Amino acid sequence: MQKNSKGNNNLRVSDIELNSVDAEKAINESQNNFVELLPLEVTFKIFSQLDIQSLCRASVTCRSWNYTIRNSDSLWKPHCLTVRAVCQREIDDDLESGYSWRVILLRNYQKSKVKHEWLSGRYSNIRSPISLPEKIMCPMDADTWGEILEAELER
Image 1 (cartoon, rainbow, N blue to C red):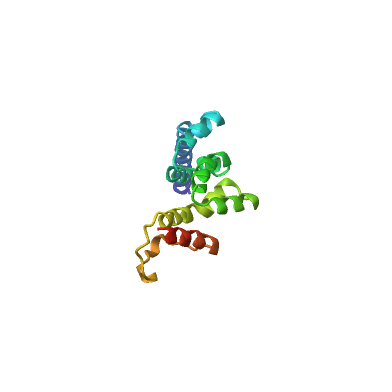
Image 2 (cartoon, rainbow, N blue to C red):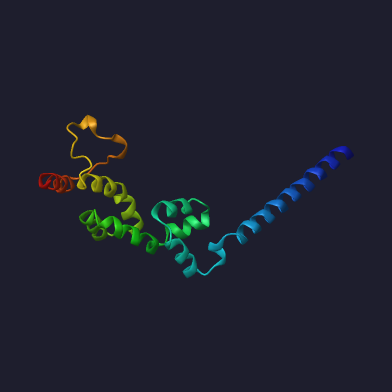
């Protein structure tokens, strides 16, 4: 019986040690997390300096960063307005539908890249659907294809 109680005490001591190590680690991580330490305005200023790819990467760093980035529409608006240069009709329609800037960007970012490639003439020499690079293509509506065809006819 005494051996069992000693074994149980050892387990409890090691559990306490592990819990204290975990708690200490959490405190250190919290102290290194500027999102939790700095005023919200400063945090937004820092995140607003990031490009789209960096902002998306930062959002998967930890929960607090994800929450801050995901719920800060003002961080997504400038990127969305850049995409609007290519997809004005799509962005305006999404705004009228009440989507957030983040959702609008998610809905239109890939389309804007593909549409820009088409409008700049990158695919002017393609003669069949087999020649299209599948990885970067995305579905587009009839109005978008109309814009692309008009640009091709003007070349």
